[in-house]
Each structure stands twice: as C-alpha cells, then as structure tokens.
Amino acid sequence: MARKDLLVFLLTLISCTDAAIQCYKCTTTRPPLYTNETVRLCSEFDYSDKFIVDCPYSTFCMKRYFSAKIPSPINATERDCAHQKLMTQNFKNGFWQPEVVVEEPYTEGCSVVDDKGVRTSTTVDCYCKSYLCNGADIYGFKALPAVIISVMTYFL
Image (cartoon, rainbow, N blue to C red):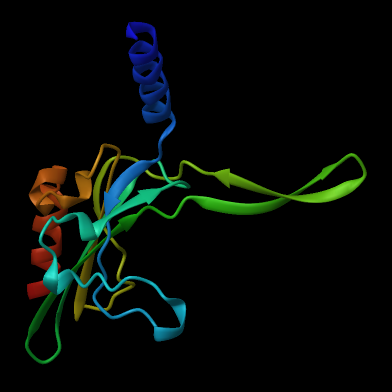
C-alpha cells in the first residue's frame, strides 16, 4: 500500500512541474455571446477561482492598467495570460505541419506604453512569472517609476 501512495505522490509531483502557469483573467467588457467564453469582468474581480485560468502557451502573467480623462477620469485594469503563442509551419518529412512556439519577448516588471503623443490616456503593462502574480496591486510589480511617469504624463 505504501508503494501505491508513493507512486501517486510522484505522479502528482511530475504533473505539477509540467503544468502551465496559472494567472488571473478578467476583461473590461463582456466577451461576444457566440464565443461561449466565461464572463470575467474586472469590475467584479474578487480573487476567486472563477478568475483563475491555465495558460498553456504562456510563461508570464499580464496586468494592464488604463487611465484616461475623457471628459472625466476613467481607470480600468485587465488581467490575463501574456500573449506568447506563435503559430508557424514546419516542413518535416515532405509536409508542412503546424507548430506552436512559445516565445519569450517579455521581462518581469512594468512599463508605460508609448502613447505616440496622445496625452488623453495612459497604459501601463506589467508582466510577472509566478503563480497568480497578476493579482498583485500594480505597486507589487515594482512599478513605481512607471506609475510616476504615467501620472506626470496624465497631468501634462
């Protein structure tokens, strides 16, 4: 009986190491009805299991903070798996075969998105690599410089 328990434990441990990262996911708008996607509005975000998703094609979680003043201040936050999936074709054994590549274009931390001179809105993108890390407050991403810059550009 002890061997069986040990085997189950080892199989569980192996499956946990190969598991995808889990992140919080919420959006600012409802998904289209025809997609059958679960409604996870950030306005209702409460850290519950409803907002936890597996990210099989990501090694990072993402959190995006928006602020705009049109005509009054609007603030919003989105959470999701980082977009890292690249679909390509690989020529193998005389045939083209689809291939999925998980790219690593991000680094941990936050940055202000270049607004191309538009001063009505500010976007800060934050990326992190640990379990449910995008549930942290924006300051939890060590983003103080990015937040200071975004506040400065907001008032200019």
